[in-house]
Image 1 (cartoon, rainbow, N blue to C red):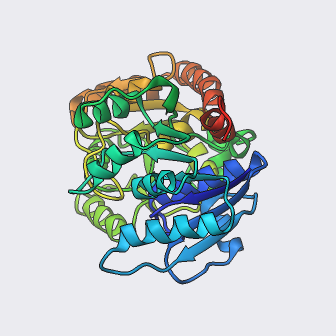
Image 2: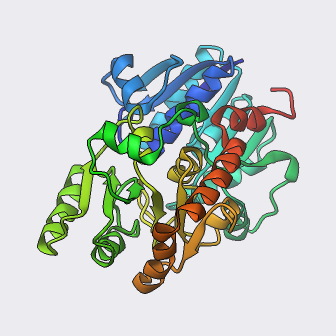
Image 3: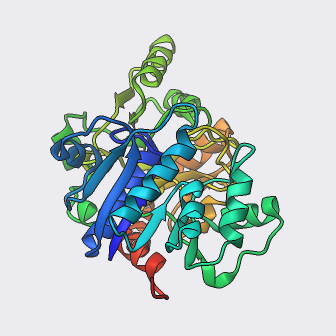
Length: 375
């Protein structure tokens, strides 16, 4: 099928929404669809750079679409849908609610993938239009919690046949043959001691301060945080230095091609989310998020320690992870101690995590989203 994917994410970028968009397009392309991704901007980027940055192999087309600054999102949405129609796309797959509604207005089938509640004055109106307009359409919610939140915010009941609950995914092939932690540490140049790892950004609510507090309490272990914007990484490196923490490393951003090996260097992987989580596009996502690193952690096959948030328990349970109260340093220390002390426990959790990861392959996700109807 000829699919036009439309996203307001910047490409290239190290933000989670940009990475997620590229992973979805990659999975659709690997499933045999003809993909063109439309994103805002003027400057094209070489495919080789994108392949390394995002960890993708199957090439697909990308069109950078200029937009009028005053009406940036709405103008981009309109221009992208027009281009897709002109190029005879058979389906609009979009993360921009404006594009989804406009596609239906023009008689084109549309899939809208929602990661958050509609924002601003016009966001809810666009969402209502998408729900009310006739046509072939599907709404993708990344968590059950997001579906409930949408229904509450919009005061509607979303029809079962038009809604797919699809958490984020993982490229299982990239995690199939990773070495054990000591071998991975040797390959990335780390010392051979128990390692507590975390990957992702260091925005507010991501647990950077809790990470440092745990490093203070477990000086015999080394703590590795892979990822983050330069300014955030510098801030936390400075904090670690001020606290005289010699067992902490903040690597900065790691390209997706290298990230699995770095994650594999850890014996325990953390998701120390707070009760409020800042996303790459702003707002609080603690109640509705589907963190991509969660699925990476499952696939890498390591013991996972996570903040005990209801939305995380849509994927994890006591068979696959251990949990600690958000923002509670003592609770986290009490949960981490047995994981560091008991290799058998770590191995048992790791084995269950690998099995659970098989449910979250990107390609299978996209097949499920598009399945069950003619487009």
